Amino acid sequence: MSRMTRPKADRPPKTQAVRSRDPARTRADILSVAVQEFAEHGFHGARVERITKGAKCNARMIYHYFGGKEQLYLAALDSVYAAIRMRETQLCFGAGDPVAEARRLVEFTFDYFAENANFLKMIRNENLLNGMYIKRSKTIRDMSQPFIAAIGDLVERGYAAGVFRCRPDPVQVYVTVVALSAHHLNNAATLGTVVGQDLTDPAFQAERRAHAVAVVLAYLGVRTEN
Amino acid sequence: MSRMTRPKADRPPKTQAVRSRDPARTRADILSVAVQEFAEHGFHGARVERITKGAKCNARMIYHYFGGKEQLYLAALDSVYAAIRMRETQLCFGAGDPVAEARRLVEFTFDYFAENANFLKMIRNENLLNGMYIKRSKTIRDMSQPFIAAIGDLVERGYAAGVFRCRPDPVQVYVTVVALSAHHLNNAATLGTVVGQDLTDPAFQAERRAHAVAVVLAYLGVRTEN
DNA sequence: GCGCTAAGTAAATAAATTTTTATTATTTTG
DNA sequence: CAAAATAATAAAAATTTATTTACTTAGCGC
Image (tube, rainbow over all chains, first blue to last red; front, side):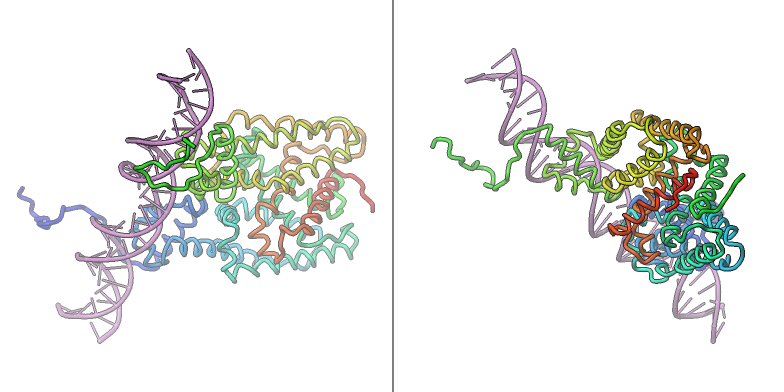
């Protein structure tokens, strides 16, 4: 009864932790949690309530900063693509031993997918939606062009040097590299059940990495007697 | 004339096409449409209303025959797995030229995925759900074991005969065959945007098929001078 | 300090989707 | 052929989920 700090007459004296005001941080928090949520559950499975819980903020903030669930999804998709684009520009292919470069190409792709699980998960969902949103994003469209061009160069150089024994379509090679690096992650649950192994196990992944490199090099006709 | 279909007095004389009673057909219709719906939109994106529309029946029927949306999803998943299991048992590997058999293995997998789009789509969604439901299905778990065992045999025979130059882990080979056959379909939307080609185009698919075979044979060390 | 703007909160609303209830009609069977 | 069983329908109810409204308050520039 005799509370020293008398609570508001018409409001329960909730000990609410008032979030300090920090627009940039709030926005970033929401986006970060949203990537996680959309990656984990897909667009339709994602719940804005879970996002607010995770970002420790109010649902209103999502509408304040992003406009709605859909726009938030788009922002999340853009953000994971921006991240990989940054990484891709860092490694510069073009010079050096074609065989070493080819190996590096596979290993980079493989490792990036393994380390950035959310990227593949976002993409898996985006494909479930038939690329509904990716088509809107101009920035995404032409981001991997240099990557594919680099593969084209690589193939030509390796063939000219006589270390590769074929000159395949760079697009096919690109798709193959990505497929070998991504499929076991994208389908870890079902494949794991079917083959009776845990595909997320580091030992399997290490084996898979070496296998992927071996497959690509063998296809290019590189001699690997060992 | 005594049986002139006189409309009920206390009910509007709606010209409703009364569905003839056929439990088996109704159930089958629902299941078939459900496979389509779940494949297209995933579990969370699927709408029971669309399923009833497609199956030309009432929502109540879904609960009548299956128990609910979740159980219907499980039935749909089982049904697509049952279909591929049936096909797999038909082609019997084991004898014959190892190289021809290996080629047949890749081509079968590739063609099955291409022709049965719903299978891959159901699986993609199931992985998005982290294999939540596949784990419950005992029948699915051990269905591909013979397939993998066949690959193991194939590898051994080919190696013994000297036509293969390595003896890889059958599981890795299996994952690779599936990856090469499935990834471009699973990611047609995003990959297509990124490489600027329509991956659903028959010409691309034909090229991809040949590529997949070439990659696997090259990896196994088969000489294909041509 | 003062007031204004925008960040933040709580709670209501609106919309959608799944699930049940109540009822009718058809087929099967004793 | 009557009665029981069950397939089918319409519509309501329950539930979940996204979005808005109305309001509060912190923090910044003056």
